[in-house]
Length: 144
Image (cartoon, rainbow, N blue to C red; front, side, top):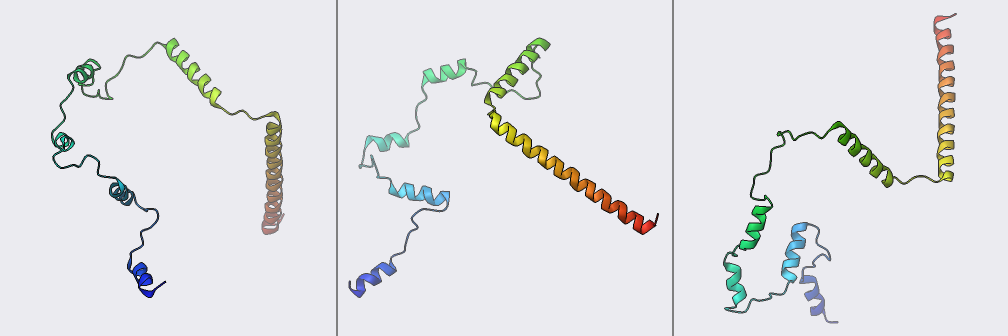
């Protein structure tokens, strides 16, 4: 290779292979897109400059769905369901949540239980030893 070729490569700024920020990614995507429909005097250009006409059917549907009304305030109190309906809903929701639980196998349950029992036994021993040490310390300090 010639020295000129190496100099050209050094002068050329290196773009990172992957943009770091979201703005840089958007800019890179925009520059990479081909300019589709940019022919001089094309109908696509004219249509993009004009505001889009609203579809009357879509507007009628939105009105029928109640989309033209303002959002209700949270302060407004809705009618409460009966006590039995609320209890029934609670039980259904609890049952649905319990179906989502991943229940441990018998082997896992035995393992978890043994770990807990060993930890509790260790803590009981530690507290007993500390209690004995403090008792002896109090006897030494205050003399008995």
